[in-house]
Image 1 (cartoon, rainbow over the protein chains, first blue to last red):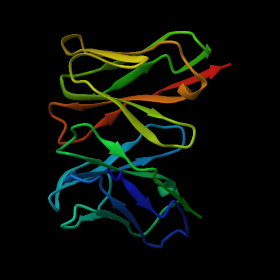
Image 2 (image 1 turned 135 degrees about the vertical axis):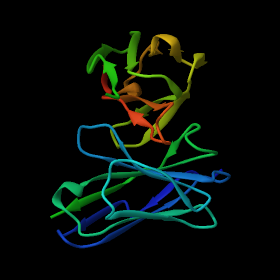
Image 3 (image 1 turned 30 degrees about the vertical axis):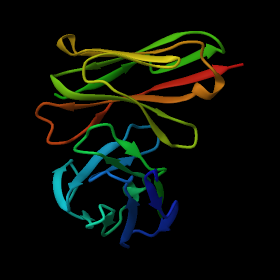
Length: 112
Length: 110
């Protein structure tokens, strides 16, 4: 059984740029959620995708957007990067909804 | 407002000791999970436990939803148990948002 994989593992961008992070869900899982974890804090919910549709969103501005593909993999896009966007971005998949989430190893994003 | 509070914030244990971590939440939930984040940042799902008691090896968890708390028990701790433990809840009004608690940082010393 393949787990949740994320790419890239690390990324350095400058303020104002755009970034795309990728996630492959665990086999058999149709729901993908994205979280932002700032240093020393717990993860914060960005949004969730279920069968290619956004299925819930946290308190993040519209410059955070996403996609889910027919194979249930997903992308997180962030436009107009700000310094405060520096964080660990985590992707999680689940069989359905928030039932037992399985997390990837994350993408560490640094915005300079 | 919505809150998920964990205690203690920090815990240092001698290898072999037992511990209890607590998670209090402010409203009714339909989902509660416990996670361990290891020193490399990987979040591991320990339990999906919206109510009742579950055990997995040296770990067990109990959620009393009517009293809005959950407990994670770690017995015979090992150095590999070190890391941050999070509880995460989905409130009934949560719109698929899993709220993570403040975390308990556990350090197990040999």
